[in-house]
Length: 145
Length: 392
Image 1 (cartoon, one colour):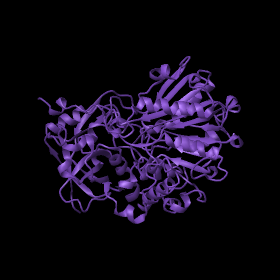
Image 2 (cartoon, rainbow over the protein chains, first blue to last red):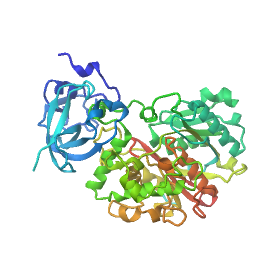
Image 3 (tube, chains in turn brown, cyan):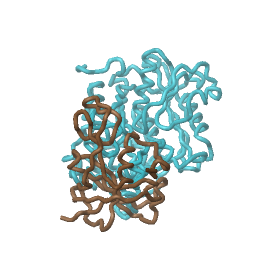
Image 4 (cartoon, helix red, strand yellow):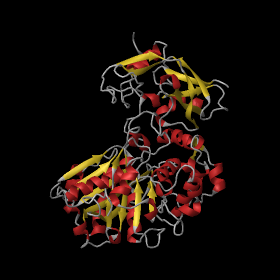
């Protein structure tokens, strides 16, 4: 499969999360566990600092969690100017209990009046677009009580 | 002195010269950063009464690219003996003082310039330059670019999960703008900020409004450090470096929004080491320059230096308590990154030194212990305590 994100690669992070982006383009939300000691290791890294294993297992996870934190951005920032027409938009840090509390960033879709720390979230996967810089991305919605 | 005091570092070096160019709104200095760096370093050397050609060490941090080897022919440098950048961004400033001190006490250099210069005239938007292209895909893909947004997420957690009143952000801003009024160098000295103007100012990224954010500026700022022995014979009252630990503990570092605790500014561990290594505690500090890229991160830095805790932050972080000359802990007495100008935090070092000399525009009477905390929220941070001769 030709992955879109490879042609748009952003080099700034740790860079051990290719499988995350590949999975999203395949339509699956996967997060990594250490193949040695089974702990969730997120953000992905090359070696488990706990047991020393260099192997990871990428497990499908249901994109369900809650708002760990959030911000509503009212300004068109230089490197995310593709989202200018969406301003103001809300970005959430979603905590995923089924993945050991791993936190995954995403844009919030739909009504955002109820956004607050602890609010339940459900995610869906968007195909690569200019707004997400050629990467597939998880977009979150408030799941209601 | 107590157990854990770092006798090799404590009071063995001093800041003896400070130099600053005027602060210009970003993109308006008309001079490249290299020239601003030279101006600041020459001014700092003259302030100290040392010939610029004698400087043999150059230390900076972040995305500084005006390295010593690029300046030595302009300074008349006899021999460059030490040069280094401290990781990573603004978190590295006090650590740069610490590294300069390390070079001096180990005999690798005698006169070290610690400096930072920025100019948008010849380059990109400063905040992009400052980010050093190390923003992760997890962030950029999802609409997060600037420090204002990343810090906003942490401060929102501080407010909604830890219960720190949002009002503390406004108090931090009011303090800085109040102090800037008496500082003729401050870019924001005429802003006349009050509660109503703050409350009506536009959002940048909630919970931050315009006045919660620092002012990117063109300028150069430098300090000169030498051994405590040599400092005694120079022109200025020495500001002795008592300690400047850097670092990060488990749960911190580059973690792409998975830090623990998330609201932290990164000083857990580092701040406690400062108190242990210097033998002083938060109650001893007379005045503090708290690096506030954004107000809320300054709140977290104050908490992690143990001036207050999340439960008492609302009582401690008030305009009256943080204002010179009579507050319990006057902070950001030049106007700080918010109201004086943002030179990647470096101007907070010169202000920390002015408080020891007694020459601040908002002088705290008899200040002898002066704290300067580095860029909060950076994956690795540092913090420094400076003092006069009585504190060594």
